Structures are given as C-alpha cells and as structure tokens.
Length: 389
Ligand code: 13P
Ligand code: SF4
Image (cartoon, rainbow, N blue to C red; front, side, top):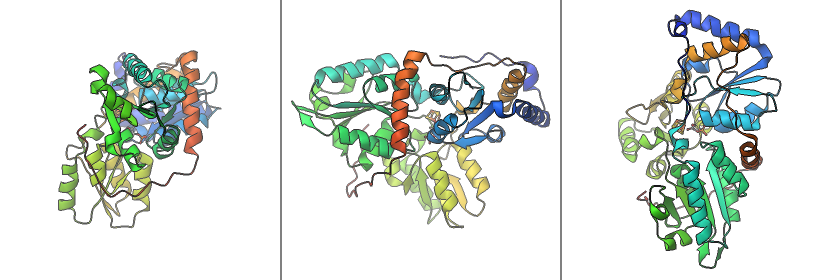
C-alpha cells in the first residue's frame, strides 16, 4: 500500500486563479519534456491540464507515443501509471500526483491469492489449455503472472477481441476437464463479455478467494469454461436494473448506455454497453434531442452533459457515485508536482521491477496487438439468465 505524504500547506491555500497560473507556468517551462495524461473520470479542474485524455486503452497507447517526454504525469490511478512505466522507453519517468490514487478493484486480486487459484486449477486440470487474462485494472505482479503463463491483458475497450482470442484458444474438452479462460479481477467485465461472445452463464463459475476451492466443487471447476475472479468496481456495481427501470419510466424514449463493469442484469437491461471511449463516441454521434442515461463515473457523465447541451444526459445511478481514488488527484497536487519538477525534484515516481515488467510487458504487448484486429461479431442471443453471483 502506498501513502501520500502531505504536500506543503501553502498549496492547499492557493486561490483557484493563482493555482491555475502556476500550473500553466510550470507546464510551459517544462515544455516537451512533460506529457500529462488524463483519464476521463478525472475531475474538471484536473483534466483541463491534460495534453491527452482517454480511457485505459487509449492512455496506454498514448503513453508510448511520447518518447520525447522525460516525464509522464499520469492523472489517473496507480495501475495505469504502472502500465505506463512498463511500456515507457528506458529513462522515462512516470509520476502519479497522489500516491493514494489506487483502485479498490485491483486491490481485490492480491498476487498470493491469485497464485493459489492458478495452482489449484492447474492441478485439477493438468491436461487442459488454460488461458489466464487480467483486466488492466490490476497490479503489475498479476499482469506478470498472466504474461508468464501465455495469457494476455485486456481493457474494456478491447475486451471483445481479446477475450474472443482466449476463448478460441481454450475451446477443448479432454480428460474430464474443459479448457478454460481464467479472468481476473472484474467478474462483471468477464461475465458480460463472455456472454456476449456466446458462452452460456452455466459454463461460468466465480472464484471467491476467501473460500476453499473458490467456493466451488472440483466437478464444477472441471466443467467450467470460464473462471471469473470475485472482484468488482465499487462505482459501477452500484448501477442496478431497478435504476434502468426507473429512468425509463421518468424519461420515455431514453437510451441507457453503461460501462461493462456494471453487473450482468444491468447490462442486459441497458441499450448499449462499452468502455468510456465507447460511451463518449455514441453520445457525440447521436442525433440532437436524444435522451441518455449514462451508467458510469459521475465526472464523465457531468462533463458529457455540459459538452452536449443539444442532448439530455442524466446519471443512471441516483447517488451519482464518484471514484474516490480518481478524485484524489487534485489541482493542488498537480501544481506541487509540476513546480517540484521544474525545480529538478521529481516525486512519486511509479516503477515496476525489471523482472515483473518483462513478463507484464508480454501480456500488455499481446493485448495491444489484439486491440488492432477487427472486432469479432457477437452471436445473437435470445435467452437471458441472471446469475446468482
Ligand atoms: P476504461 O477506462 O477502460 O473505460 O475503464 C474504466 C475504469 O474503471 C478505469 O478505472
Ligand atoms: Fe477502480 Fe472502479 Fe475507480 Fe476504475 S472507477 S479506478 S475500476 S474503483
């Protein structure tokens, strides 16, 4: 666990206008030596300083497109900065303005628990092809385990392609065991995408690290085509089918668009599901007068509402939940970080040890390659089953 030391108090007392001038001045002084990346869930008073904005996939690609920058300041969360460090050119420094900006979902898949799960499954099905996959919302150590075992990372922006690749590889059935995709750490992205790609819900099991055999029988694990780690996003799991029902009642004709980190029943009740870039693109391209209920982090929803006054845009979740860790990146922390950089004192560098980085890079490179492939068409489904998980 990383802790952010308090920044000098003077930064906390700066009036907004002065804070803005100082950030702008430090950025100008650092020029091409600095690139600031901003995830779409960042607050407005931070994202305004980003040179590039994007979802996790786009930011990973962008971080590699700026080799001339000595410093990449990542306005996002820890796993994103780790990913950028793994992809960075030698000598490039990736900095996170507040070390407390972690991700509760990534924290749900501790490496020791994951290793135990992997060892149990390998022992149960020694002959099977098992493809480990981790959502990029995970620690570098988990990405490395996946890379070491011939697996791949994915993001919500390329999950169809990458999970489709894994399901094609793990499609056999021998010695009483099905081949498997083992998906970490977000059960919802895994379930939603596998179902979309044609895997029935009864071929998926959930692995709960707090229970023996993940809470399954040996037979259920042998028969499973997909093993989903019991992790979730604290923001997106709040969105329920009841929210969808309510918003349809309140706004006749509304289109409901949600992130695939939302639970299965919510995604099934919605009209569209996709990554943050997908959500932005659909709203941008929609006809004026369209009504949208958006199931994702509140800063993005509010920004879209401001940027598209020609549409009606509301939050799907009535509590308008924000990602508390994304929110830790403040303009005060950014000002401190940039002024310290100007003074030749980089802080909060995020580094991954070379051995971990080597294997994690394999999993990330494979993902980036697969992201470029044309999307697989999804089969048409009639039935909808709601899982108990
Ligand atoms: P994307 O950026 O892939 O849409 O994921 C959303 C998210 O939860 C990032 O933490
Ligand atoms: Fe993690 Fe969810 Fe926040 Fe993304 S939105 S950083 S998945 S807690």
